[in-house]
Length: 317
Image (cartoon, rainbow, N blue to C red):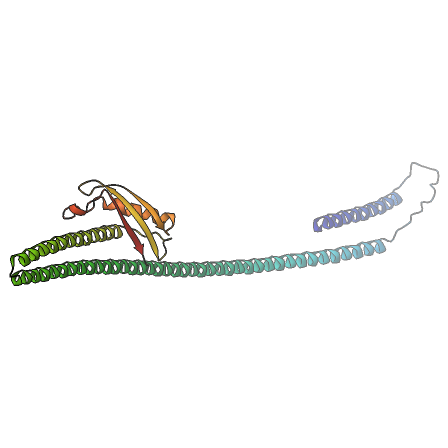
């Protein structure tokens, strides 16, 4: 914009200078012609009228226009400088804005990093608490399993004590029966000694023989019943030891179990017969316990051996 105005001003100055030169040349030409001696011509030359033009106003006007153009150029220069100053200030403002934006972005980045670090610390704390809770849960599980193991061990010891107590009672019953038998024999001997007459002695002997036979039969029956009971208790104890109680088993279970065996005590089959108040899972676990026993006691129980043995399996909880 400033370059075009300057070109226009230079053009106008050239036009004014050319016009001024043309006027001066015209005046010089008129003066020359006026002073020229035209003697060859005899006729009188008509008078020449010359009009002098005062160029002062034109020159003043041109100067005024030049001054105006200079003022305009100065104004344009001032506008240019003002525009340049505004552009510089705008650039400076843009630079400051850019710096503030970079500072804001840097602060935002630092804040994001701080939040990320804080989130990482929080996540680590959460994971640490989760690990502590998991370790606590495992410790509780171990303690619970240990308590269950101790309870099972205590139950086995109690059952073993009960079995030993039952066996002790059976031995006491056998000893008591033996003592009664000895007492009866002693009485029979006394009776026999007191018999003086042969008939009385014979009757005594017959009575003694009858008593002896009856006592032997009673002792045999008692021994057989006692041995049979001991045999059943031993089988029930072995099955109970090998039994793994299912979670669904409730206290108060009572089931009759029938075991099939061959001489030597080898178990070939087992089944649950009525009565039985256990659920299906408990019944299967009882049969599995019998199969785990594998072989029942045989030596010492030959007299009470039977291919089919029934016993009552109980769980009181």
